[in-house]
Length: 116
Length: 111
Image (cartoon, rainbow over all chains, first blue to last red; front, top):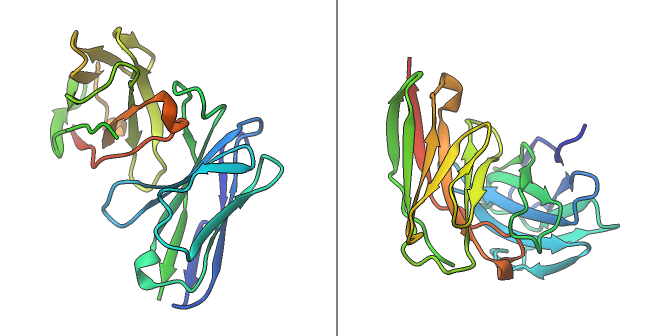
């Protein structure tokens, strides 16, 4: 498909387990963003990639959260030792170039994480 | 980050125009004004953006005040499909395209 693809679409895990969420951006998009949205809340910025580097990690809520991007394409968000407050929809977006502030962000459908 | 203020909710009738306001009194000269919307159970989608001049596209129009301290998103004929949360966001060059979402305006459309 031509859009941003995220997997899994749904993930249920037990407290204390690690989870990995994957994002496939639109081909050729150099900028990639992770957000999360708790139930009934707005979007919370987590991290931004330009190519494979992350110039802005300011939104990561704790050191249990990490993300990487390889080959300037796929990104993985990892949450270690999950807690119940991590339950949310994790959204990924990409844009042609993050340096162009007129760049439209294209969002995926999100990965819904439930921590029991 | 420059902040925006929007009403929590608005109602509209189908096939009537809708004017969604946004205040951004602390906007800087290089901040762009973006609008996104989020339909239920979906990721946000781009609606429109502008800097100083009014903008039109197939989805909507953006009217920007002369002092840029406020803007209005205009949906010319609301449909039931336009029911969504609408976010007004400012972005600047030094943010790498990052958008900081507020709470937005929940628009409901009545048939």
